Image 1 (cartoon, rainbow, N blue to C red):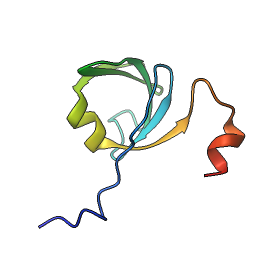
Image 2: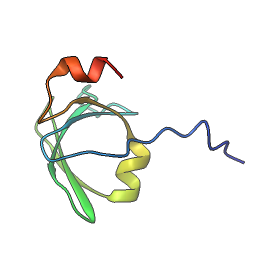
Image 3: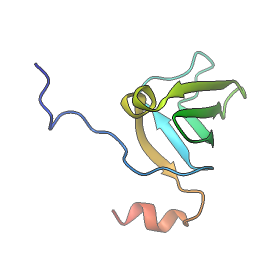
Image 4: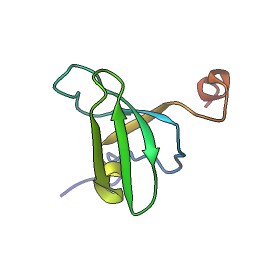
Length: 80
C-alpha cells in the first residue's frame, strides 16, 4: 500500500517549463523542457534533444519537480 504523503507530484506546469524527472534519460540528463500540453505532454530532453510524448497521468507520476518556470524568474522558485 502506498502512503499518499510519500507521493509528490507537480501540480501546475506550463509550456516552456523545465522539469526534472525522477529517473535520468539514457544520455545522462534528467532535465526536460515541456513543448506541448494537453491530454498528452510532449517533452524534449535538454541533454540529447530526444522528444517524448507521455500521457498526463504518466508525466505527473514521473516528474520530480519544476526547476525553471518559463514565465517566472529563478528567484521566485527558490522562495517556496
